[in-house]
Amino acid sequence: MQRFIDRIREGLAQATGLERDELKIESPRDSKLGDLAFPCFPLARKLKQAPPKIAAELAEKVRIAGITTVATGPYLNFRIDRKELAETVLGEIQGAQENFGESKIGLGKTVVLDYSSPNIAKRFHVGHLRSTIIGAAVRRLHDALGYRTIGINHIGDWGSQFGKLVAAIDRWGDTVDLENDPLEALSTLYVRVNEEEKSDPELAEAGRAAFRELESGKQGHVRETWKHLTELSLQEFDRAYQRLGVTFDFVRGEAFYEPYLRSTIERIVEAGVAETSEGALVVSLEGFKEKMPPCLLEKSDGTTLYATRDLAAAFHRFEEFRFERCLYVVGSAQKLHFQQLKAVLKRMNLEWEPRLEHVDFGMLSLPGGKLSSRKGSVLLLDELLNRAVEEARKVIEDKNPDLTDADRIAEEVGIGAVIFNDLKRERIKDVVFEWSEVLSFEGETGPYVQYTHARLASILRKGAGREGSLDGSLLENAAPILLSLGRFPGVVRNAAENSEPSELAQFLLSLCREINSWLVPNKVLSEDPGLASSRLVLVRGAKICIRSGLRLLGVAAPEEM
RNA sequence: GCGCCCGUAGCUCAGCUGGAUAGAGCGUCUGCCUCCGGAGCAGAAGGCCACAGGUUCGAAUCCUGUCGGGCGCACCA
Image 1 (cartoon, rainbow, N blue to C red):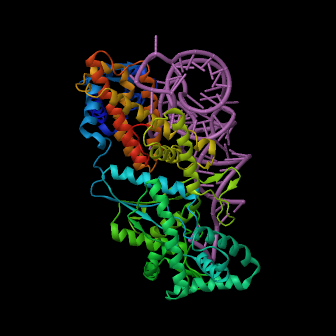
Image 2 (cartoon, rainbow, N blue to C red):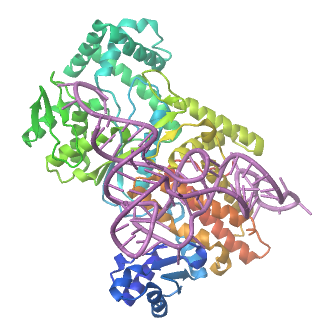
Image 3 (spheres, rainbow, N blue to C red):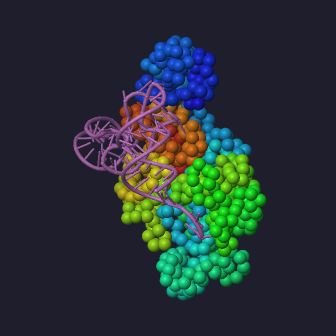
């Protein structure tokens, strides 16, 4: 597709004398008008002529191989020769196969991604889903562009709540089952300690003391307990990641950066941007256009904060990876935190500060209200996935009872539904969790895309041996599909650039709609061998594209379902 | 109180970074399986793009204000 756009730009540049890059090529409102369009309005002032007249003149003047040019009002519309369109796009897919959509624009550059980042001692629940799924998808999108990607799980394993938890275990550890269901036990203790410390100063102090000991680095009972908590939690997280198909290069909790805290603070102090305020060490951020409270580096008792550890992590990551981008896939509730983080780096005049991006996303809430682990009102990930898989199993039982390997496919479809559902809308939008929506497999859903893929796979199986030569002129009525397929590499690029997997998800939905409606009146396995062969090549191309797209989103593409 | 984000069909959302007559899915109604997978397809109904100004040849898209909702605002993470 890009080749056609380039050709059009070239032709227009010659005819108008304008730079190629300033020629905006877009899609016409109605596909009947053409495949691509150039609005002539911007030229009106320069040429002192009405746009429709310019369009008409350009239509005469511009000659582009394989593309016919028609002026419609103020627009210059381009129609790509059908034969060439089919043969170019499908040829590209045939050449690239499952690598279709990939490119090398990121070669030699590194992108660090910080995603998932749950807190230890808590169950893995649906609140962790968005960061995990969005982050993993954004990461795969960058992989596809040739970037070296570094996925980091920035586990929340540090902070005063772990002091509280150690104190709670010391006091009530024998009242819960820490052996068989440790996370459940910890969750119970966490709720209890938050409740009781309000009226029990001794308990509150025990918690603070435990965190002080933890931060002191002392190898003793507190640290042992904390380490144990971490291990138990990571085991549970790993099960979730395995099921979701999510991986990391590094699991580095906040504790990992502990040894770098001193030098980080020194560095900021040396840069001359730190000051003491109300007994605490802060960086004032008053000069910025967004009004921000100061960033706290050290509490008045000398202990560090979240921001200190994130600053240490940012320095550490830059020094280790020299990243081109460092993406923090974290909820929009933490927007201010990342603004402050970047503002501190800006005050230090670090040129790489713009490379840090907060990839923020909207909040997930349950219909009854928000999720809160302190109150214990959560929906566990396993529970969600189990129910989706169970639902998929039922649908298979109903629609395709003879399916072999039905359990595995139910897992792929159920989990695919959950993942796709989270990626299909713009990430900034808040989401209210609705079972009816997550368990729906019709319409704009993951299973719809998977179904389309399976349907194409089925046709290819039945047409085995008949797929061969391609005569593009036989695929005239598939032009919308071909144009979409041609757009795919650009969609991947934009989705990565914008850290917005929904752009890819929306593309897939639209492609599947086009294909499903084309399939009805166009029998692929036609009596005519030439027609069947060409249509099979098209079906093959579409199947490859859908499969690649799903893979980038982290959704399986079963051959049958 | 201040700051940021969101507001498009009854509901959930797209709208290609400012372009032609605003599009899907769900739900409602009507059709389509002796025909490659009906988890599908075709059609109908449904819109003051929250509201008011402004910029522009052109605004759902950019700016200002108002209203509604969400999130955040120094020793939690």
